[in-house]
Image 1 (cartoon, rainbow, N blue to C red):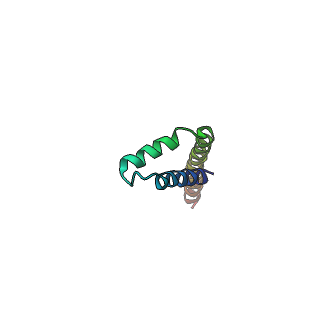
Image 2 (cartoon, rainbow, N blue to C red):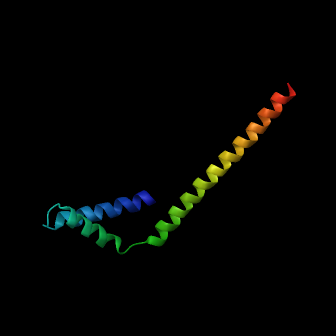
Image 3 (cartoon, rainbow, N blue to C red):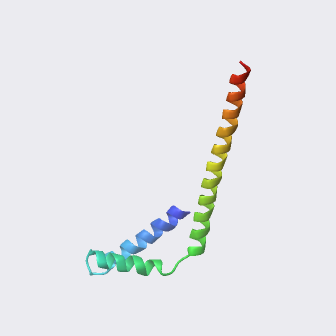
Amino acid sequence: MILVNVSRKINTILANIESSNAGLDITSIMKEVHTSSAGGDYLQMNTLSALIFCCWVIGIVDAYLSGKRIDSKDSAHYKSL
């Protein structure tokens, strides 16, 4: 969903730059980016970004806890030998 929204914004920006006869200079590009980012569905993008971040943190915590559990099993196994 994030990639779809980003690609739509990029296509809109490129279409606006092509339709204007201002040329391809950095100021016209930045102006168009600023104009297109003024409106939009920020709530949806922020919600999706927060969801991705939460999943990432949960994955890190799960990997850490799984590693500790595996390490404790291995150390218990070697102590019994």
